[in-house]
Length: 182
Image 1 (cartoon, rainbow, N blue to C red):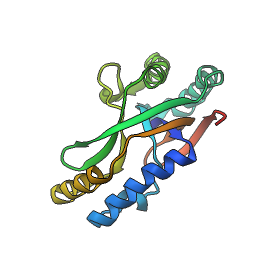
Image 2 (cartoon, rainbow, N blue to C red):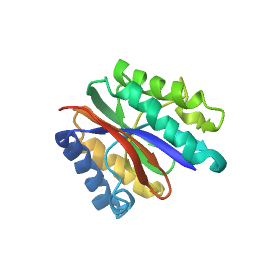
Image 3 (cartoon, one colour):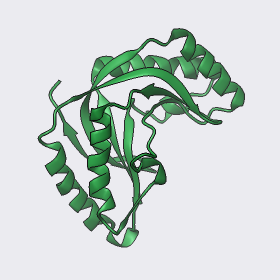
């Protein structure tokens, strides 16, 4: 089973990012992000758990995450540009600040310590590229059009992380969340 740990934002930030998601969908005709109700977020860990021990491992993860997330505060993220994973994903690029790096390292320390968990190579220290996807499963022409639309209207976005979530992927299912006061 595949799991994700993601950061979620305050309402004002969500609206600013959602505006770009909508612009991409309208300009390209590709509404994958909107159709699948993907909220604005930054994934800080992606990992798989062996089916045989899945429920035990996930229960332990929730307990471990309770310890590391309960005394944390909301964090600030600033998106300063756009980027693409060729050839199908357009994203907003946040500055990799101390808050983002520390959350990623905290989660990595917990998940990598369990022999029943396989962490994606893209979510390991010095291999992680923080991003907020605003267009997905775009063909080459859609990606070019989406990039053009977002670049023409992009302004730096500064927002706050107000929630961290652990979720099962495919199909998506929230497992646990940790909220911070706005």
